[in-house]
Image (tube, rainbow, N blue to C red):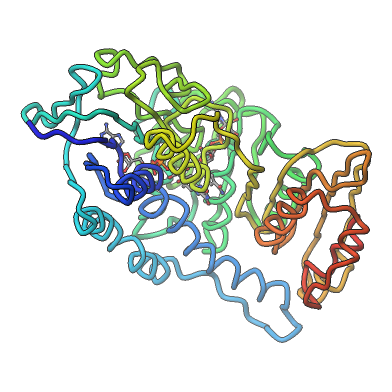
Amino acid sequence: MEKFNTIIIGAGPAGLAAAYDLKAAGQTVAVIENNLWGGTCPNRGCDPKKVFLSGVEARDKMMQLQDKGFSDVPFVNWKELEQFKEKFTDPVSKGSRDGIVGAGMTAIDGQPKFISEDEVVVNGTDHYQAQHFILATGQRPSYLNIPGKEQLLSSTDFLSLKKMPADITIIGAGYIAFELATIANATGAKVHIIHHNNHPLKEFNEEYALELVKQLENKGVDFNFNVDTQAIDVTKDGQYTIKAAGFELTTDLVIGATGRIPNDDFLDLEKANVKVDRHGVIVNDHLQSSSSKIYAIGDVISTKEPKLTPVAGFEASYVSQVILGQTTVAIDYPLIPTVVYGSPKLAKVGAQEGARVVDQDVTSWFTYSHTNEARAMIRIVLNDRSEIIGATLLTGNADSLINLLTLAIKNHMTHADVLKEIFAYPTAASDLEYLI
Ligand SMILES: Cc1cc2nc3c(=O)[nH]c(=O)nc-3n(C[C@H](O)[C@H](O)[C@H](O)COP(=O)(O)OP(=O)(O)OC[C@H]3O[C@@H](n4cnc5c(N)ncnc54)[C@H](O)[C@@H]3O)c2cc1C
Ligand SMILES: NC(=O)c1ccc[n+]([C@@H]2O[C@H](COP(=O)([O-])OP(=O)(O)OC[C@H]3O[C@@H](n4cnc5c(N)ncnc54)[C@H](O)[C@@H]3O)[C@@H](O)[C@H]2O)c1
């Protein structure tokens, strides 16, 4: 039986970050992974998606400048870009595992099961004990429980398709649905989105979300709202027919993007006194589970914070400090900006309502008109002291501008404070003084 100070289950962004922090502080650390080392983000999430988005962004710019320097705008060549993506994804698992071993930690492949609060058995044979465990097992796609559900592919399957079909349907209208639809649309595929209600991207301001829908519709994406999918049939030609009340659609491929569920099963957590609910492992404000020896971080925890890579990293750093006895205060999350990488991008941070809300259609401003954006919108929210407290952006550059606004909010900046700064011109940042 091997013994460690800390054993981490799950080698994604959360687990790996905690492992390096604890090792650097002198602990003996083991990491157990039952699939690809590196986890969702670099293997089948953020990073491969972002590689595909580089093709979308290049095409969008050319489309906007059609007859203004560009005439024929090509579709994104899926096969080539998918191969380029593999240059980033292929080395991840080995590199992540080698990194752990190279740093003097123990890498264990397999499926762990708890037999008590301080012991797991991996693959049914190997026993490991630790003073502390960190659960960092993330989430996996959830699938609609309908006849034909076995025909549904996931975002993971999409990001590794060898060929983009001519006609593709995505069920759901959250982050993943919008991002995959944007990518498929840029390859020339006919894309359908089917959503059970009429609230796409429900965490975002409705006006901004519907403007994104409109812009994607103008690019050819077919949105079907208030369609509650009941069944998926395979046709004799090998296509799929999606059925709902008064609705039928035949398509080449169906992607389910109706949310993700926590990987808290298969671990025999009840034997370690760890309690879960349907959103994941229940933790207190120190990210400690119902067992005092077991912590949980990242996507697998049942908390209201958005499930994102930088959030996972923040929790990893915090929990390492707790385990090392370097902090006893409760976790205190900073502002968390989020971006839907659509075409254009939709981003938000902080409060969505306040003492003053400034909504501006900035399409005609030089920043957005020189690249001929179809429509750009920016909402800035201020408190009664005129400090910026929130923002929603729908523009091609929303992903970078949202981080600047996050810092402005953090520093309680007012219009007067913005005027004291000099930002490079012409950039989205140099517009800041006119946005408030
Ligand atoms: C398509 C997609 C796009 C995304 N895009 C973004 C984005 O643009 N920006 C962003 O911030 N976030 C994005 N995310 C979310 C981001 O990927 C996650 O928030 C992040 O990966 C969470 O890290 P984690 O370490 O908690 O979980 P994961 O990265 O999921 O890692 C968990 C690890 O645990 C392993 N594991 C699971 N069960 C067990 C078990 N029983 N035993 C051992 N190991 C186990 C898994 O194999 C995995 O390696 C995206 C997600 C998806 C699916
Ligand atoms: N850019 C990013 O940061 C990014 C990108 C992708 C994923 N993520 C992370 O991954 C998580 C999961 O993404 P997601 O898009 O799967 O989840 P999500 O929660 O964002 O969206 C799920 C969507 O499915 C819909 N839905 C639920 N049941 C349905 C049904 N029966 N029929 C049709 N639609 C149904 C929901 O209403 C919702 O719109 C995100 O919440 C986020 O934490 C982040």
